Length: 485
Image (cartoon, rainbow, N blue to C red; front, side, top):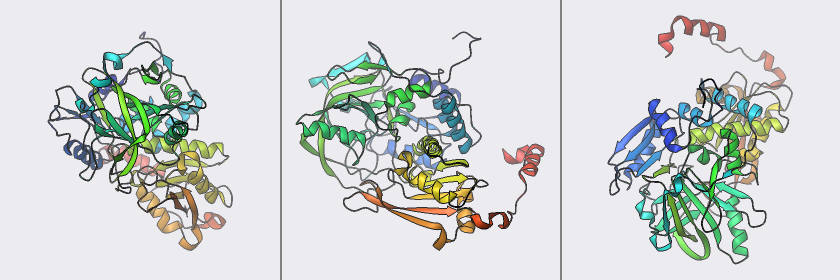
């Protein structure tokens, strides 16, 4: 790039390795040497994220027990304030809502889908294992939690499939357990696109071709585990977020698109006739809510990987988790967009709280404009595509409440909500076997909508808040900056 040329958004890094160099310069990487893949890696990643939610360093593991130096694991790559802004190509934000606003503003002005660019080769093709050579145990797939049923190579992953009817390429995140050196199991929740696609193949008596990317740019993980609209190409969505196309290579067996700069990609087929036990696994709601089950196995026939590969790792656990901050930021922006597109006016902020695993406790702040406005806002957050899956609570607050600040939210619930009048319930919503309150199908749950806004009919007469004015606070911060670092 020429020095006087204006930089394009997110052109600042090529792949995960370039990104890690940037994170190093920012002081955002914690290095851990000699950890055991058996429980220690998982516990360190979990405890680091929990100690400083949204502000913890990424953890890069090397010299993992039983594996050569240079075969690494990265945990929590984009799961913090500053790092997520770099991945999204945004300036460093002031706070959570500023991050969401900045992301939305950029998306409104510049975003368009940019289809992936097919190339003949890339770094991921540096090494290839074929057929009998395949040995997944060459990679340090961690045994994450003490009660898990096995080692998981796929947590911060992208599962890539092609719809046999339309040719649409779907990329999504599902957990992937290692059965043996060339077989894995994929757990997909009912209603998820990957499960629907695989069932189409099975209904025709065919195995389902699949790619499993197990190490990559955090942007690919971000788009793969969000509720992007049906039949939108996640690779094109990622390209739109980066401002340039994602480079892909046709896989050897099924012609599926391999991210050219990924670290580790597995290729195989999901076989409905070969059932193996998968799980249990401690999941994103913070529980072992589903038992081990028999699932179709995946025979791996190709492994594409870089020299000294980096396995990327997300640790579902009791929140805060090492991926929920990044999920919360992107999901908040998506919910905000969908509500606005549905005609909702007066939105001042949206935040999906990490305490609710980024899905179960979502808050929207509005400037009330008419009777029923708060109820309309809550129902839209609850039922829009980005907010519907596996939700539980939606809280609507006034514009003076920071929806990302739990103290603010609980204060509003405590002082502006009359429970018999201001709490509504919606039954039989889309959920998952991972919901700890559900014991058997159908996988549907109930939702609560809390109106924690001042009563509309007399909101102007509601008691005034006892606090310093915004202008006075700003003067104090300027006069006594050391107090508020």
